[in-house]
Image 1: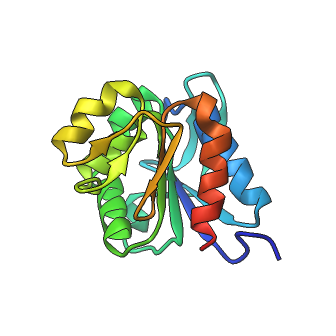
Image 2: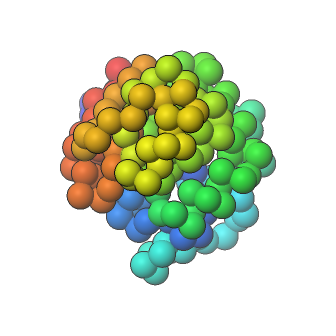
Image 3: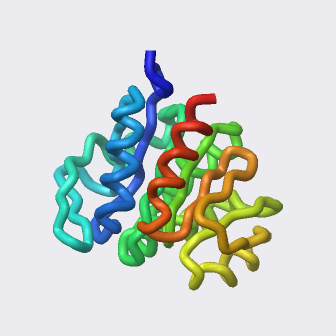
Length: 174
């Protein structure tokens, strides 16, 4: 049995995602045994800012009542800015965090956590330009490669992916 056997994970993203911030965690959790569902605002494929394409398994609108064991939010400025405007994605994240289930966000993906009011009273990290947004949303922001607070795993940039992926597997496997 692997670390994430019988674990269902949603990845919520749209066009403009940071390629490595979606693909590396996707590979890591799949190799650890998880079942992964990619959610987006529309069906078909989404394209990363560097050209990677990923097939969308379902829409956020169709998944608002769905229950996943964990969620991964990849960064990419364009992706993060668009997906935080999707009310269904915000509802999924808000409900997930309210239920005490774990979530991982890297780089600019923390914007979706802000929209879902999921960082108040928590310590998180992100791409440095989000520091003020996160503090204004009630979080304590720190400059560390990976932080876990109450089931929220956060990380800064693609260079932190090894630590982020390891922490996702650890926290999601609890």
